[in-house]
Length: 210
Image (cartoon, rainbow, N blue to C red; front, side, top):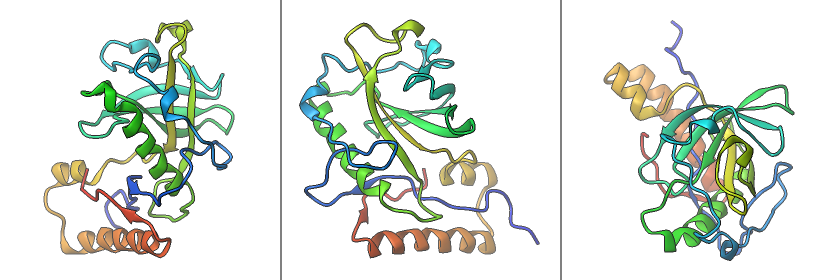
C-alpha cells in the first residue's frame, strides 16, 4: 500500500556550528565571510510581508531569483520570513528564499545574523537526502525599482531547497495522529538525518515538528 504524501522527511537547517567557521557560502558553495559589523540596523531593510506586496514579482541577484509568493513568517527565527522563488538561471527551479524580519532587539541583529550564517555554512557542506540543501547566502542592494527599501539599504537573504509539502507540525494538524507505519517511516528518516549530522561532527540545536 503506497504511503501517504509526502514520502521524504528533511531536517531544516538550524545548527550549532564549530567555532572558527567562516560566515557564509556563495552559490558555488565556497566560503564567503560577511562582516557582521557592516550589517548594522542603519542599512539593513526588513521586509514587512503585509505591506511590501511588491516584493512578490521582484527579482534578486539581477534577474536570477524571481519571488513568486509569500510562504511563512516564523516567530522565533532571526531570518523569519520565507518566500517561494524561481531560479531563472537554473531551469526555473523552485527554491526557498529566507529574509530577515524586523527584530525585537535591533542591537542584537549583527550577532544573531552571524550565528545564523555560521550554522548555514556548516549545513552547506552536508549532503544527505534527509537534510535541506543550502544554495547560497547573499547580501545586496534592495530592489528599490520594485518599491522595496531605499537607496543605500541592503537586503541579506538565504536561498535554500524548497520543500513544497509542509512542515511536520502542520502535517500532524491536518491529518491527526499518525498510524504506526507512517510514524515509523518518518522517524527512521529523522534518525538517518541526525545520525549523518553527528557523523559529520555537527549537532542540531532545535529539533521540533515545525
